[in-house]
View: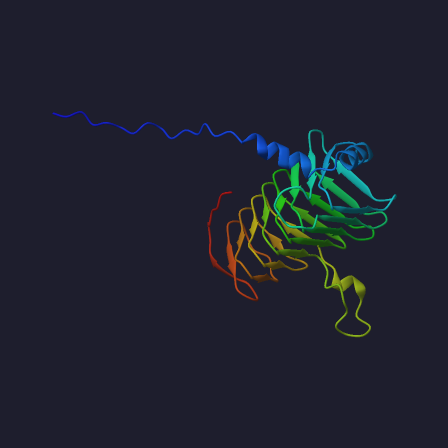
Length: 225
């Protein structure tokens, strides 16, 4: 009777080549990284061509051990943008990466919170004019947008307060390429927003949201990086 051979477990001995670290170093502005690390009392890595406009009354709060990476990864010719208006707040609870060509804008007196392991891919945009909270290990894909405001009035005399409403993304949410999450939306943990979808209503955990306006097609969806 022939013995059954089992395949050895898959293992990886991959190591990034030296050229990777050289390229990473050449894309990083050492002086600006040092300056913003001191200013924000935490580790901040700033890529070349990245634009940072933080008002002196704005506050960037990095939790112990947190790291903010701005405009280093990927090959877009433009850097990332971080814009913070007076009295605005940005809270980072772990390693957060904002890729090149992505934009983060925090308005007057607004508060943006981003959890550990979350990243914004090329061309992604967050506009926070009141309050936006993004959980841990979230992925905001290419060209995706998260906005807590309508930005402009559609009807003359509209109350400005109605144009803004808090947006919350639970842990491990994935907003697909070109998708938009609009004001007042709350997504439970593990939600997946399909490419090009426009989310106008809240959804519970583990929902797949597709279409414009987005509708829920299934529950208990899962995904991984």
